[in-house]
Image 1: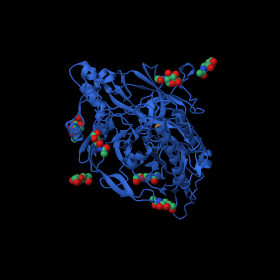
Image 2 (image 1 turned 135 degrees about the vertical axis):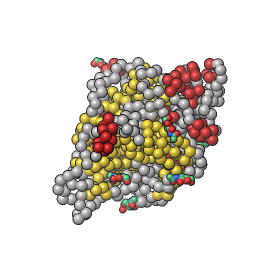
Image 3 (image 1 turned 30 degrees about the horizontal axis):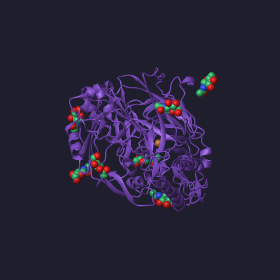
Image 4 (image 1 turned 90 degrees about the horizontal axis):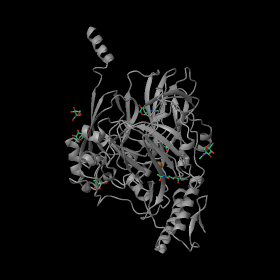
Length: 626
Ligand SMILES: *[C@@H]1O[C@H](CO)[C@@H](O)[C@H](O)[C@H]1NC(C)=O
Ligand SMILES: *[C@@H]1O[C@H](CO)[C@@H](O)[C@H](O)[C@H]1NC(C)=O
Ligand SMILES: *[C@@H]1O[C@H](CO)[C@@H](O)[C@H](O)[C@H]1NC(C)=O
Ligand SMILES: *[C@@H]1O[C@H](CO)[C@@H](O)[C@H](O)[C@H]1NC(C)=O
Ligand SMILES: *[C@@H]1O[C@H](CO)[C@@H](O)[C@H](O)[C@H]1NC(C)=O
Ligand SMILES: *[C@@H]1O[C@H](CO)[C@@H](O)[C@H](O)[C@H]1NC(C)=O
Ligand SMILES: *[C@@H]1O[C@H](CO)[C@@H](O)[C@H](O)[C@H]1NC(C)=O
Ligand SMILES: [Cu+2]
């Protein structure tokens, strides 16, 4: 008795609470049939898929030995939302903070979760690889929750593709897709499968941690005749809000309390609906609504499927607007920024005929040396922005300054932006702009900000709108800021924040294991973005050989015959492909009109003269002869 009492005291004092959790993750292909329609390879851990949920407590240490058993594919692991204080090299994004892990190699992820609590997730940060399944939930339990519940449960949602992401990428980033139309998923996954029955015990309260592990589409989620009480977003507690549904973008987390009925007489549907506005076309056989169930009693039948009338369902819902969610620990608006970064985001076709995502005209292209290694080897030159290359969208931040990012989304799509290593205040989130030619550009002149802005690590920008976020540069290291639509990340929609490089050098080093992995990947661990270095500033500024984007398509290009012909072919193929592939019964007219407009612009730019033989898409998505 006495002994237990002493232990109790220690725990209360928080002295011996930290534990080390060691995992061996053998990452390999596993055959699975997530949606019940097709066997395919998914990327699993220890010959199992779906992947395990990691549960730890505040201040615990996590050691993961990740061995890459994939044939011909590199991998990496990112812990989405974790600050990785003083362990930047454990953050995961390939060529930003680490070398890709080649087949056969083992990488040790070793970090503590410090005082963070809440719902996070882990996923591959090698291209769009997590779309093939390398993803899972990461929970940090609190010692003392600011709400009561009896059950603690998780739910992941996402979209599913029948093809593997390298094959999808090949047709997506192609000259034959000049509008950059995003890949259309084949299905919704509800907890990595579908037709799920979830049991609730009458009268109990459940904390449900919901994570969007998809790489493209946001979801509406609700339980018929039940209220969801939002208590946490992206690891931060919020003032409780009762809603009939939530809207969750890729990368985001919402924890909700669900009060089970005291004496239920029936079972209920648990519904998840894709945000169809994010899809360019809606194939007639695509289910945008996923019916699952909450079961109270197995003596009553489950209600039937709700059907696929997604528009009607979405119209009936009132999800919480993320901008209005107030952190429980009311954090006042951060002061005026010491440093402001303005980013104008556009999608454009570059000289190779492929659509890229650009910030201020620059599409992110990975450097030859991971940016963290450039910091660690750069000595006094690590504060010079230029050494990080001309195509990495790098910005150097000073210790503890308040940084503001203004992001003008000059694209008609919705984009969930994620900042590594921090949470941020969203102080402006505009509505959608009317159209692509008149995006709503942020004007600081008339801006008003909330007293207690919402805080999270991933926020969705509205079409042709803007967001303004603020954060404190209190975490030395190299941090990626990018769209969590991984198709867009692969198109270059990212910037690199180099935060307090001199302090990073002082406090952080690469362990031998990491250097070995780099050696095996044949990636240098010193030098500027081009891999050049030396004793002089001149050698550090020498970017000869760096990776760069294709140059823009010249306007009125003289090889217009070639280009025009190629573009005509794209248009025709695009239309014909769409018709054959999808039936085109329900084309998303808003999006498709934007894309058609882009095509027209492209053709105009190329000086196309003979339009008589051209095929084009009308707003019903039919190929028409102009
Ligand atoms: C879910 O139900 C649908 C329709 O009955 C079926 O086609 C699919 O295979 C089921 N999914 C799973 C994972 O069994
Ligand atoms: C991982 O693979 C290695 C090598 O095949 C094996 O020795 C080890 O037991 C595996 N670990 C797990 C957790 O499956
Ligand atoms: C793995 O990474 C190395 C080093 O960047 C690269 O050369 C190789 O092409 C990558 N492999 C694949 C399959 O992407
Ligand atoms: C993980 O990092 C801690 C702190 O640097 C160190 O003490 C520990 O030995 C490391 N674990 C492994 C397995 O190397
Ligand atoms: C989702 O899967 C996890 C792990 O298998 C399970 O614990 C949880 O109850 C499931 N959630 C729902 C809503 O079915
Ligand atoms: C962004 O676009 C606006 C409107 O065209 C322009 O005024 C502003 O200078 C641009 N900012 C940058 C950084 O290019
Ligand atoms: C800003 O406010 C002033 C005064 O109300 C108004 O005249 C002006 O049009 C506004 N500017 C913008 C860009 O909304
Ligand atoms: Cu995006």
